[in-house]
Image (cartoon, rainbow, N blue to C red; front, side, top):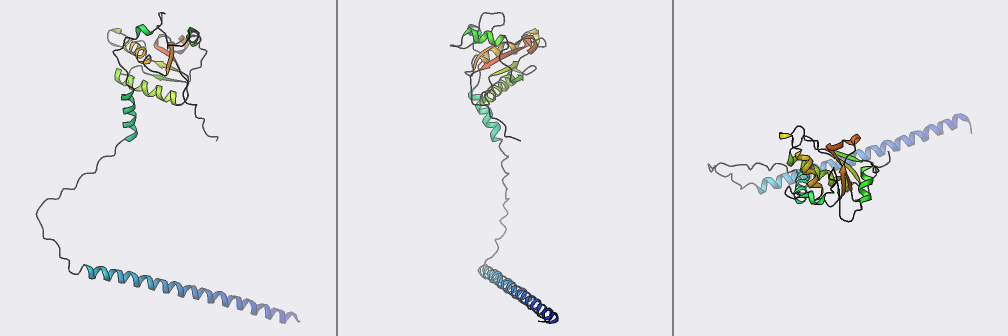
Amino acid sequence: MSSQRRTRLKDLGQLGALRETLTERERQRQLAAREAAARRAREERAANEFRDAMADVQPLHPHGRAVHVPEPHPPQPAQRLKDEQDVLADSLSDEIDSTSLLDTDEALSYRATGIGPEVLRRLRRGEWSIQAHIDLHGHRVDEARHALVLFLKHALKTGLRCVRVVHGKGLGSRDKVPVLKIKVRGWLVQREEVIAFCQARPIDGGSGALVVLLRPGQPKVQPPPA
C-alpha cells in the first residue's frame, strides 16, 4: 500500500472520530436543553398551582393593634456560667480557723493527715520543681478566692504536682495587715487536692509566696507532635 493511500485512510479515520465527537456533543446539548425545558415546565405548573390555590384568599383588614416583635435573648456564656457554678460548689470558707491545722513552725506550714513530716522537709528544700504559679498579689479577697479555686482545679486536671501561690507580704494593705497571706493558708487547707504547703524559699518569693504540693491527679496531656 502506497504512503499516499495510508495517509488518506488515516485522515478519513480522524474525520470519522471528529464526526462522532461532534455528534455526541450535539446529543448532550439537546438532552440538556430538554431537561431545562422540563424543569421550567414543572416550575411553571407549581407556580400556577400556588396561584390557583390562593385565588380566593382575601387580605386581612387592618386591626389597629401594635405588634411587638420580641427581642432575641442575648447569647448565654455557658462555659463561664459553668465555671462559676463549679467555683460556687467548691467555695472556700473564710470562717474556718486553720491555725489548728498548721504546723507550729515559724512559717506555719501544712501537711494533710497521713502525710509524713519528710514530705514537708523535702518541699522546703525545693526537691519538687515548681510547674506553675498564680499571682494573687493586689487582688481583692473575692477575686483571689475565685482565681485560686480555678487555678487549683486546672492544676489537678492537668496533672501538676507542685505549684506556687503568690499572696504578697501585705505591705501595701490597710494597716499593713497581710490579709491575703492569712486567708490563702485558710483556703488551701480546705482543698482536698492540697497535701502540703510551706513558705517559698527566698529565690521563689520568700514570705510573700507558698509552695504547694498537690495529690496526683489526671495524667498530664502531652501536646501532639509537630
